[in-house]
Length: 262
Image (cartoon, rainbow, N blue to C red; front, side):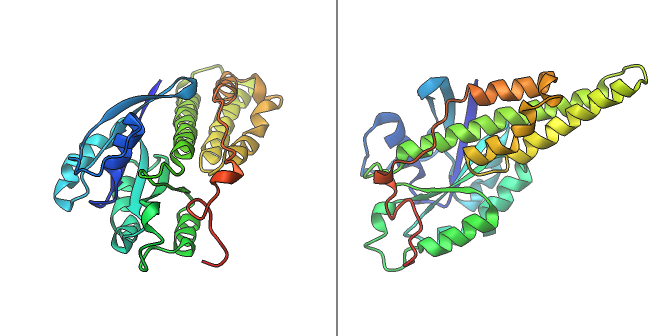
């Protein structure tokens, strides 16, 4: 299955450079025109379409055409640009919630290689506070040095899993509303179980880590929910995801973690 990943953010945040680096393995210092879309295969059979967008307000209508089809959003900002950071809440999140209110969101701090040389860079503490407020995953990358690019791909795979699980929850809710069965006690029980399964899945996809998601879905592994076809679909999807989100200690630099001194 191919999912769509849409990059949004102010102009000059490094979105297009990131796409070029991810797909070619090379960083370019040359100016790159935006709105370049790519299809890539992540490992373990996950295919994604990476959709670039232009950050100007004059392009809001054109951007909205790219928000269809259950996308995953990367809200991008440069850690060296405070204005772009403030626009996450002022512009980008409201725009996403208007067009795709249930879409998974990953917050991406770009150009981490510019942090130390910029005295006005967005601090780790400011980013941590926003991350907790929005309850989203955050990862900081550098297309120039390659910092955390692989970990961002893993987070995209987790978001991809969430999209697939939400589709199962939606299917379960639809069946609970449209299935006509004789009025027996076990009929109501079966329909109630489908709604319960949907609620567990919807709660799980709001979690920011794979472990939290698994823990929330634990009741689906237990009788009687485990006998339902939608629970089996969700469990199979989870078991086949093969996502390892454990970040090696060697990559947990100041660009990926929040230090107490900040």
